[in-house]
Length: 420
Image (cartoon, rainbow, N blue to C red; front, side, top):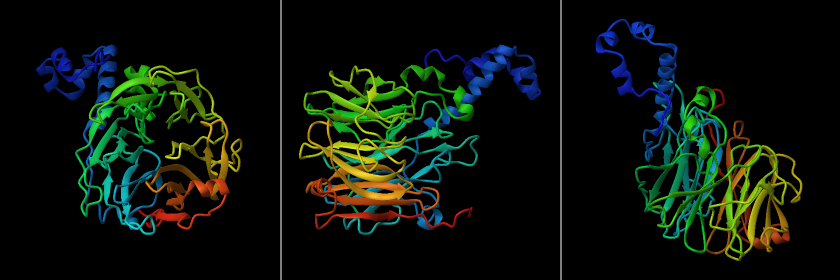
């Protein structure tokens, strides 16, 4: 990286002769000044951080290591549908922390039953000085039918840089789907799906948290600080290349987990999680510049929500709380619709009233059916669940469509708690 403020290995070898390096290990440090020792320490730390740049691997033969009887945690990531109707769900195993990894499964009967894990991305390695986690991502079907899997790779949960990796499956309905080798497109992480603008551009919400990394990683990747925030990456060639277009730094930063909606007057509406209220900002120039952040028109806990334009023109919102302007923490997951670009909301379909539910993600099928995945009691129950419903159900405040169903089980870890 340009202007890195610590020594690289070639420079270190130049400064310390081979004879000195061949002597007792401590001799070379005794010959260093305090500034040189500090530079060596910073360089070593950065080398540990750079372990997140080693390309991850999509393991398409994950059994039995990642079978349900080997899993004891579940945090949902995302859900998608292929052109032929196969459902794909991805979630986090291990923990919501440094030991995280991801697995994915499929359903060929509209979510009634699910396969065992069909792939895993696990970058942990026992010989590394710190854990290397895969913890943030999403799965999305592009208009051409290809399945895109976005995920991050980072040291020690968050190393002040992370990295968005993407793998694409050209045959997601096949008996043996094949995934491309993951490629890294930028820093940060992607938790929510791309948004396709009216002009055909893909907008990717890349969160690059505006705070230092965890543990010793807080001293790494410090030169990237100016880039941190709720970033906007844009592709004009269907994901072949990506360009950073803009960024918003929200007050009381948290994991941004931001989402976009293109509203009818041409503006882009960004909503993001913060340590306070959900905040919003607007762009009139395709995401290049943004208005001053302000509170969003609904109340929500410090957690992920889901918002998306539907084929009907309405906007779908999945949030916590019995009403738009209240919530009771991570419980009472409800669905709402807006017909006036988010100014007012109708419905309030209760998807799950229980406590410990969170992180909705969803899509709309060609027939208009809405699918939303979420998790429940990640450490205790680890359930990944599915709600299938329609706009008519939301407006009625209850299920009125014959194929709608709530609290469908996608996965449940079966490894006894506390067992290694």
